[in-house]
Length: 307
Image 1 (tube, rainbow, N blue to C red):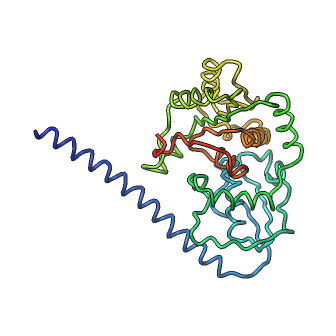
Image 2 (image 1 turned 180 degrees about the vertical axis):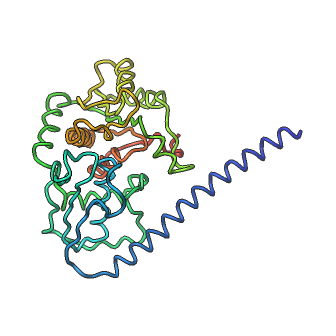
Image 3 (image 1 turned 135 degrees about the horizontal axis):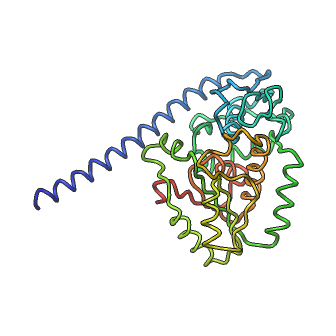
């Protein structure tokens, strides 16, 4: 074996070893911090009232709607016997700081049904995009949402009307493609996520269409990505008329239509949760889809083990 081949083998071995170490460090860190957090909270047997606000975990002013939603689910999961109030005044969705953003889209937290959750070995959902990859997590978070969090009726009605008009009696798959600021998110998960190409999505969709799907519901934050799907699949593509980025700027960071931007993404999530299959990448949006429907068959193309 010549030296060049030996060098290539060594480089491959080192690369895989570094990747493995990064993954293990991330996993061990998550387990240790989770254990410490839930050990402390599970020693607290008191009830009382807890307010979730702009400073509960970190500043809310630069975060997407479902990052905040997951924060609420997270805090309820570790404080299940408390009355919970949610008050957000400084978010990207607030029309003004006197409003409580939560009430735009959701009813107050239902405090009539409270339960203590024992979660010593469950990863916290907050800021963890891997929380949607474990069925036990999904079932837990679905239970919390179904018993304590209720979306406003007018938003649910818009999702149902869209389904009735566009997807009634159709077998459809849901595709969520996140563009804009996705690389910033992926960079926080070294060795775990890698942004899949649009061709990877097309390949998966082609296989799905061979299995009898009638339509493809596409949710994306970039207009040019939506156009690529339309060019490829034409009339099979169904999409909600939400605002799309034309300049790479994340929609939820737009100064315009703040409240509407939040409503639109909730409608899209409700529609996606009714699909027969979910194809997605690194984002809180499909994570919440799976919270709403833990049984939905799905594939995360950005997850390296699925590449």
